[in-house]
Image: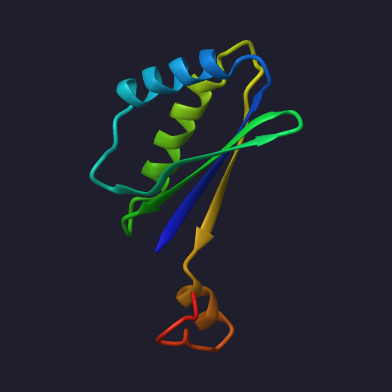
Length: 111
C-alpha cells in the first residue's frame, strides 16, 4: 500500500485566504476512485504560522496518477503569491517496511 503524506506550511496572517483557496482547490480537483483520504486534514500552529498534514492511501497501480493529481492540487494552492510551501512524501505501511527487513508485523499493536 502506498501512502502519500502532504505537509503544507502556511505563513501567519494568510490563514483565512489559504482556507478559502483550499476549499476552491478541493472543488476543482475532487477525490478520485484510486485515492482514499486516511487523514483528510490535520492542522497545528507553529512559530511561523500553520502546518497541515494529509494522508492519502493510493490503490495499487495508481501511484503516478495519484502523485500527479496531488501535485496539481498543491501547485494550485501554492499560487497564493508563493507564500505557501509544501512537501509530498511517499510512505509505505508498517507491514511492508517490516517485510523488507525480513520481519512480520505483530498481529496486535499496543496502540
